[in-house]
Image 1 (cartoon, rainbow, N blue to C red):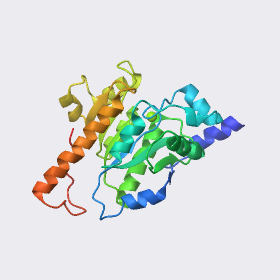
Image 2 (image 1 turned 180 degrees about the vertical axis):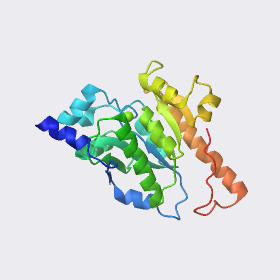
Image 3 (image 1 turned 135 degrees about the vertical axis):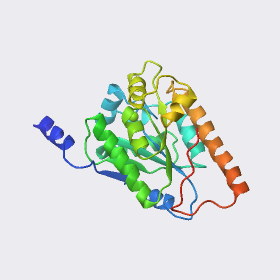
Image 4 (image 1 turned 180 degrees about the horizontal axis):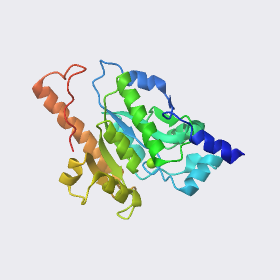
Length: 247
Ligand SMILES: [Mg+2]
């Protein structure tokens, strides 16, 4: 019966609902006087291993705070938080909200809002729908979300539906999610021009080594745009066309 209840919950009709921890930070991000872009970041297999053993530990509460994040991820997000508004966007069920927020704090991540699903989601399509709907809603609130970082084809789909540039993190060149994402986008090689043509800013082939490079690229992006803004005058008013994302 429990499995039937879980399945019914996961197959509920309508767009997946979500809720956010740290709504106060979302309110701060939406302040129209705050001229900062926002970045959405996935959690499982992006910041920490989301494999079966990790999921079991999280579900059973087996010392989840001691699950190590990928190397450099907390430091990278702390550096990015200086120049980007960060939102963690996960398809985890919100029954894991307390453990997730506790894990983030215990492992040195900066304070960030975390968006969870309000129900269990069993398919990649449902997880993509949740993330796409949440990005739309956050933008309607006033967040200037420009980029997304994740590991699944559904992440890239959700980001692309909203015009975000994606950074894809793969578990090595043989990661099936990498092949599936490339197939869905029609990408045949790792050439930057091929990625950019498909809306993919970058693909990283090591979860354990990517975060310092991601931080460097995105901090540099903000510095370059800051200098350009200084030369060109004040930023465009709300509602005007957004500058194309850079690679
Ligand atoms: Mg993931």
